[in-house]
Amino acid sequence: MLQGHCECQKICFKVSGEINQLSHCHCSQCRRLHGAAYGSYARVMKSEFQYLTGSNEVKQYASSTGSTRIFCHHCGSNIMVIVAAEPTVLYVAMGVINGNPILPSDCHHIYVNSKANWHSITDDLPQYDEDTVEVKS
Image 1 (cartoon, helix red, strand yellow):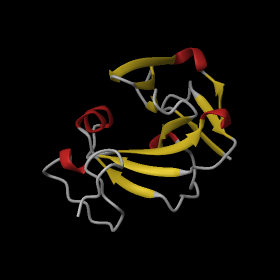
Image 2: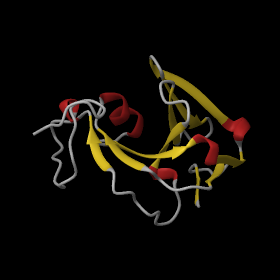
Image 3: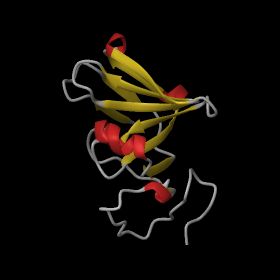
Image 4: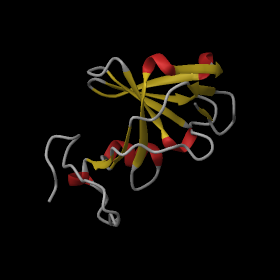
């Protein structure tokens, strides 16, 4: 089981299952919204996610066609991304997950074709130019 919360702790949640994919997204939206070189997301089953507190504190932002960002309207913490084309999963921001979660074998970088020019990817994880369409050599 995973648990997490936003910075101000008004929003708390749990995930009764495991992370089944971990992506480090280098798209310009994730960089701006996270204020970092990339955003890291745990893919979990929607049916296993539950708000413990603060479900009325979340705000939504349609960042692009088919993608909705969920965040705390008090502290601004990114909670997750909901992708309309994948209705059974959620992409929870790793930064709001507590503790030391078990990471899946499917970890990778996406949208590396738009990564920040001041950042270098130094790990050996697979890299994709878009979501997981083309492998970056």
